[in-house]
Length: 298
Image 1 (cartoon, helix red, strand yellow):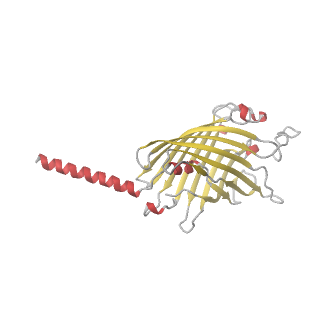
Image 2 (cartoon, helix red, strand yellow; image 1 turned 90 degrees about the horizontal axis):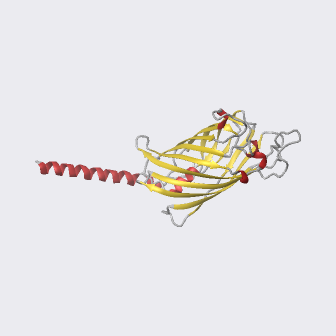
Image 3 (cartoon, rainbow, N blue to C red; image 1 turned 45 degrees about the horizontal axis):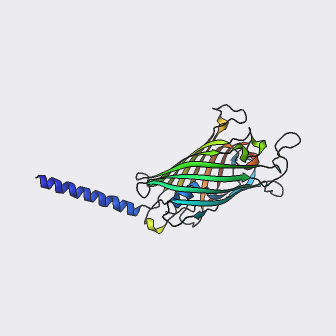
């Protein structure tokens, strides 16, 4: 009788491990390069349908290609070069494009831990420059900020972790991010000191719905959801520590229809400081719609 029980337990264990291996073979592998692409901002262009207090735009475009540098595909250490540019065309006479944001950056990623193909822990660091390509005085004669031609420039670094996991209930890959962004005083314009936050805590949650079918066909996710928060921790603009103006928050829902190859549609709600270079003192509450290039494939 005991031998029959042992044999039964052995068969159950064999079936369990065989099933686990079968699941792992079906699920797409979340490589370090894919983790890096999830952390990088996607390229997008908005429609002139914004709802909120942003100035009327024809569009906002984020041009953000990623150039991956690695020794081989399974490398645990890699770098990503990104010449990011953000452009706004205003819905005014002659449709001007004012003071684009130039944010060139280099990021480094290290795969610290991998329990299986989708449960990973990665460490990343980033060095970036943010300017608007202008060289005139930061202030107007009346003391207001010169939004049209005023010089804006800062440099910063960011350090953080990325934790990924797979949800069998949702059939989705989830990625959690937490990082600290620092703008040293010697790296930023003197005019920004005391009015521009130099210490920020980023957190985000991203979920990608895995496409049905054979994962080896390298499909794009049909749905994704991203929740982001950014808390300014230092003293600036004489804000209290619990002032709501210290919080930036965003929710982005992305849908990639099967009949489109390279782009999909997104809707985003954003609350917080205007991220468009010298416009940083504006507070935004806006809902935006547009198209996005989802380069990530599973």
